[in-house]
Image (cartoon, rainbow, N blue to C red; front, side, top):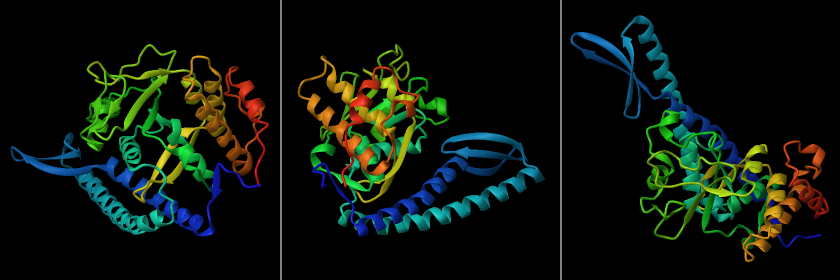
Length: 332
């Protein structure tokens, strides 16, 4: 039976996607290690030479130059040169693949959302401090299933970022000299402005919502923040579920990492939200549709059982939703 919710990737699309994911899978850790390495520099001061470790504009003294430090710098420089060669070669390959990815229709995520998520990834916030929720999470599930969801399911003009408030979004706490999420957003697009503190919007009308559990009283990123998190019902359940990681393609043709909630938990939460009396009546049908289409992907392709006993992280509120979604049949 053919589903109206999605189409399977062709063999050509699958081959191209796998090639892009593999290239990205080598490029991404090389670039991450390169950024983490920084540089080592020697500098003379008052007739003495000192060694420094430099990350951007942050400089840390390693002490007076010594044979051990000279040897460490040589090894550091060699590793840095190797990583730079690898990253450059793979970047060229990914650049060449991008037009093909677009031509084959693999570029699914809006570039503005992709750029934001890439920036969070570079800052080492993705997965550790925030995960991607809302409609954009569907791109991870469709790619994992080897499908493309129909446009009605993935169309969106906003990005929902779910903040684990146990981790501070004051980026200085991670060793990076930044000023909260607005600092990241403004580097992506300088037109982003905080809209009364509760979301950010750029001049094109794209909205970024920072969400957190309702149970949290700490919703401010830092003392001088101009963006606060909006409490979302059941957010803590999504954060408690296993993370689901997938490499997807943006509409610029370049891959990116997505880290989202475990798909069955996402589906159960969506169905629970749709059942709430306080949910906007216009949004309920879309929530329920997202729940069922993800359940269909899980049943048909991901082969994970919708069984409460296999989901020990599940709260009691979502267990009836899992049982209901268990009735969604696989389509073949």
